[in-house]
Image (cartoon, rainbow, N blue to C red; front, side, top):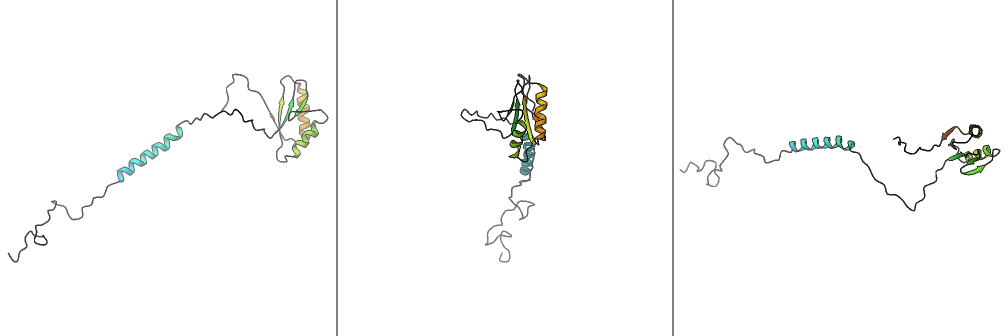
Length: 155
């Protein structure tokens, strides 16, 4: 018994550490995260596809004390008597062209006139206004209209 060791591979004279049949010493206890990553990528793709399809609506609060901001544009109005108004100030036929020229001298890049004519004004008054605007250097004229009651709003 002097030449043999007890327990085969046992150190310090004890018995050998039991081993799993067919297993080696390279057993690892790491968690396999590949299936979890696959699931997360599928969920990410689903959320990326579904999220833009959701309609987002926000109901904005209404202000009670704030005044609307004044728009910086030149507006030419014609009332039903045929009188001209530049930015809501009355203008005679003789000074219309000069008043428009003064208004556009302050804005060298903007040559758009917004025309607001009464439905019952004469067409000749509108043509007089367009001619004066053209002579004053206006390059575009936009018509301001009123929405009829009950008309659907185009989006």
